[in-house]
Amino acid sequence: MKPGTTSDGLLTGTTVLVTGASGGIGRETALAAHREGAHVIAHWAHNERAAADLEKLLGGRGRLVRADLLDPDATENMWHEALAWRGRIDVLVNNAGAWLSSSPRDAGDWRRGWSENLALNLTGPADLSRNALLHFEERGGGVIVSVTSRSAHRGDDAEHLAYGAAKAGLQSLTKGIARGFARSGVLAYSIAPGWVATELAAGSTSGADLPLGEVTPPQDVAEMIVFLASGRSRHTTGATIDITGADYVR
Image (cartoon, rainbow, N blue to C red; front, side, top):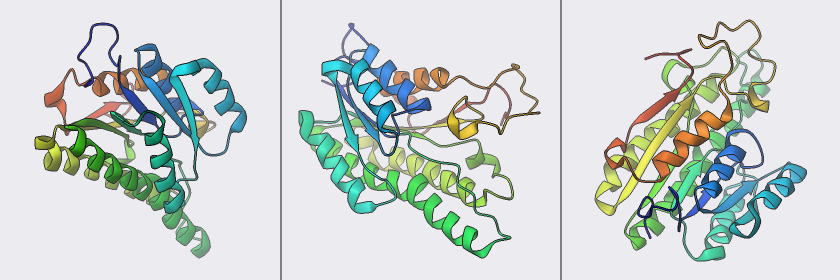
């Protein structure tokens, strides 16, 4: 059953894999997808307590998988573990990421920052996307939604150059997937948030001039992800949706 084909819920009958689901945007996406009828595979890495709390909320239509996406082998194993649960994945949400520093003023931080930002924010999602594409081609289609950042458009600050570059790479990858695999029934979208009320942004928004007067709730991002995952706007494939509360407007 393909996304968006029933009237029960936007994702009834589908299986959705959400990375970084123990908090923030990932948690809200997992809950929103579950509300819309999906079976949800929730990836987590470090916050065991938050993952356990989410598992209770997902109940019988939920499954937890753990992996450090900095490790390519662990990422590969996680995909196969996720796939084994129901024998299918209809939607991949590349949400896991981190705003890791890469200060050019410190050689160690610079090298570590580039290595870890590329691994977590680009090559990890790329490896998962590769597996999803092979699976989707066998099944006749599927959906990939990747969470990038406004930094993918405008660049990031002096201490986070690698983060912006990695997110730009993920955004370009998603566009390429949309173009290259459309005839295989694959839809691919990017979500580019600004400041979102998550741990990642905690303490970083003081003094920010936000047009709506508030940081974006993670639920706003989750609702857009679920809508795109439903397949109800197929010709939006390849697009990047900005969710910044007009803080950054292209």
